[in-house]
Length: 179
Image (cartoon, rainbow, N blue to C red):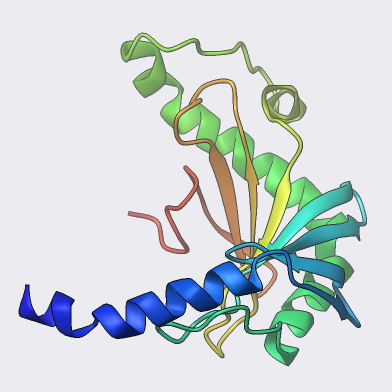
């Protein structure tokens, strides 16, 4: 508890700066207009997907607030946009394979499991997607696409893309490595 108390001034200062920054807008050369509300958000046209909400996680340092997107975020977005049309088919296949893998678990849990017979059917079970550009780790570029889904209202559905490859399909918040 002593560590928690000793960090209080930093936390309180961060909370003040967060309140002050809420609603701040910026014009980014790649993302366009973004608004800060805990992360930067806006809309972006994605080939093969249409206009999507986008969020950008830029605050990698503890107590950082409203750090503008950096070149690494812009490069990740540019590379994703360049690959999006080709990735759509890979995402569709990966979503279908994931659904086939978890279908029985959701059925046994008494959930409402949709009748998905082919990869294209999965899209009907997903809400409109949201694109997330997380903090980049300096290795391969990363983006995430998340949806609400009919088979897991609580956790939703996510595809994690790294360096142009679908590296994980799971629930939202699961991350880049499969268990």
